[in-house]
Image 1 (cartoon, rainbow, N blue to C red):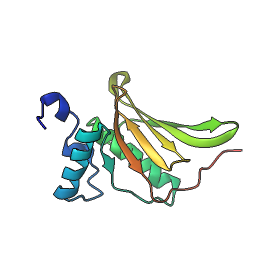
Image 2 (cartoon, rainbow, N blue to C red; image 1 turned 90 degrees about the vertical axis):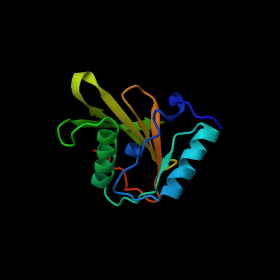
Image 3 (cartoon, rainbow, N blue to C red; image 1 turned 60 degrees about the horizontal axis):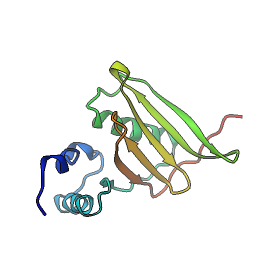
Length: 137
């Protein structure tokens, strides 16, 4: 398979969270899967017991992707509802100059989909365990 610059544009080690060590062999396997299937790379499966841990992971991942200083920009969240039942959460990191990066936590599949400022999905994280969603009364 011949690689071009456009194929490799989003495939950098910067997209991986340094909190989750990954071997070079595993990184190569994820990269080859992307090239063959056209799917974004998947991150190692983290386990969160608290909603704050999930928020921090999402915030750090979005900041890292857009090379933003963590703690300098606010993140908002909304609960996603389907047929009056909560089915996920929408997170939006508000960066400089109206830059917005988003993530969606799907509780049905227990995965997080990350989207960059251009709207293109750059990462999918499958969670092994996730916290209970807290809905305000």
